Length: 78
Image (cartoon, rainbow, N blue to C red; front, side, top):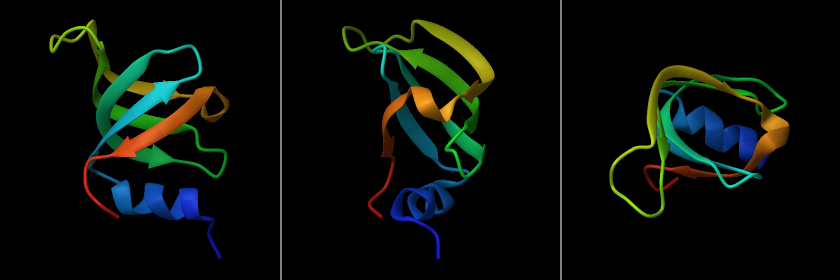
């Protein structure tokens, strides 16, 4: 039986998510894949800023290592 975080990631596949890292960086993109350790592959990823609606940088496809994640916000109610 999958844990609640993994279930949430499964429901969020191919949808937009926001990932906040422990160092304060935020990334917004489409969740493409994940693994049991919550490593994430996101496409159309941008680095977001709290101060501006403009992205800091546009990356395309990125890998976010699970142990760096503080929280994940999904784009729709689960």
